[in-house]
Image 1: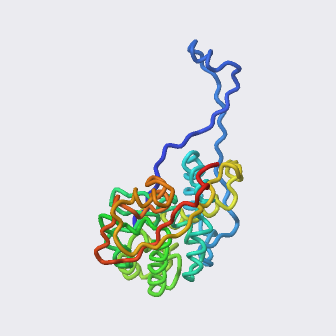
Image 2: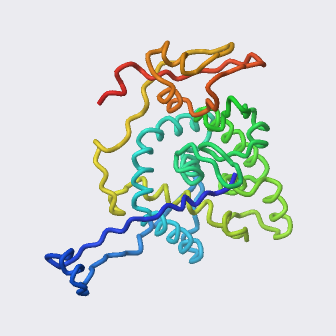
Length: 301
């Protein structure tokens, strides 16, 4: 799973003291622009999955501050993530808890995909950014019709299985998290050649070296967005999706017709079931799928 840095163009807010800036600009005058940019403060203590972060190390403190500064000035992108956070936070954290994992792993999901059904240049896909081969290793279906990397429940449970396997080998949740970015075998090799086993002491390629810090930065910001200038009202947060579940065991000749029979359309069905990757389901292996059907009346505001 590759760390996607979510390189969206940040939108900076500028305050001008000119009474008629448009007119001044038209006349070619230079006006003074006031812009307030601050280095965000980090908490005095911090942990990941119950493991203390050594903020007494200057390099660790600087690394967290760097990631927090980066995401703090992704204004449009972080606003969108805050909106999505309201929709998916409880669901994903609940799944992690069911699997015996700390809720802090939720912030890795945000670091991976921004809670969006995206695909990376390396073809890692879904909310947890599994490569196809790894996804199949953790029993996710990936084919032309179904891609369970885009199923929030199944991909979260698969990610949890990975973290528990990595923890069993490395002994810390922080290192298990780091291995999700670079791979278990790579971490194993680096631990051997460096004779170390602490993430905060080890040398990693830049992407992995920043990975856990990026998740920690999301944890800090999302716990109190207003501290970082994000004043998103409750009316602007996305509500959790409301749906009923329909079990499908056989073929679906046409998902659009399936949607119509359940008083919705393919667009909405796909929004609720991103794992559907075709307009039909052959289902040659007779697998059972649970389809989320939007509750009637919930689309209207």
